Length: 276
Image (tube, rainbow, N blue to C red):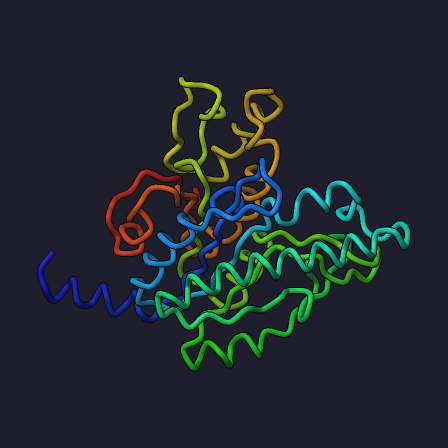
């Protein structure tokens, strides 16, 4: 690639919005409650600081949110007053994780500002139905990098519901015309089986609506816990973005420099979601 084309490509990168989802398994230890992987977050923060594009960052709750939410059935909506204390604790823990991320990002001079989804989003039975995005957009016009998270948000039918970072990323990408959505996890992408348990698992480089049907056929196999859980839903919803021309990538954020390489257009081991 000659210098003129390279400069043009870099200019394009500056103009397009990139949404990066930092998976909870990447930034926390899911086997230890309220444990953040500080070294990992610091390294990823250095890479984020090198990206010269408009950014929105979203992080999963990991061990700061899931244990409490599961124990008190917060994902089922409001059932009794005992849940309110658990909801309050969950929000407090999410703020704790936010503080860690903000501190390490600001250390790299990333002008990050937290946006708690529950303060500007409304759901109906676990699906976002409304969001006031103007505050987000206004700050971004100044150069601010918003930081959002998976959150417990008001729900018009069941009182409250958990909105995942994945759903938020897809919602914002559609309405803010993102050019690229990156789902960062602790494996290279979508596999034929769970790569942590099955050494013969192979990476699926590209997923389309047609090949997704094949994933659905094998999704009831016990060796595919990621696919039958969050990964399956992530792919299903992300394919909507791909059909609209928005690039979607599922990649390994634990491998140093892959994030920067991907954004710069260099080849990395990952799964890309594309239309047929």
